[in-house]
Length: 84
Image (cartoon, rainbow, N blue to C red; front, top):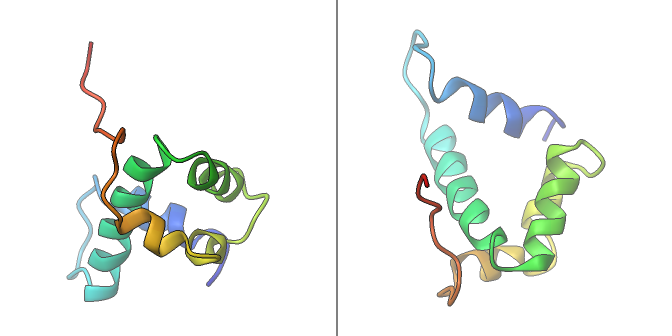
């Protein structure tokens, strides 16, 4: 997976783009949405997310070492931030 893949997928979400989104695009977007929420309550996920978004680590880091299980387990503190 190229290092800019995740950022590119996230960038096109809010802009009109010709063509259809693939199932892979939708799956990655849903996973990253869940990852961000889980990362707000889990320091291990948060550190990995920052490493990838700052291009210090490869995107595959977001799926390594049990991260997928941590993303999909019920979170006790993770919530979507609401505007103040």
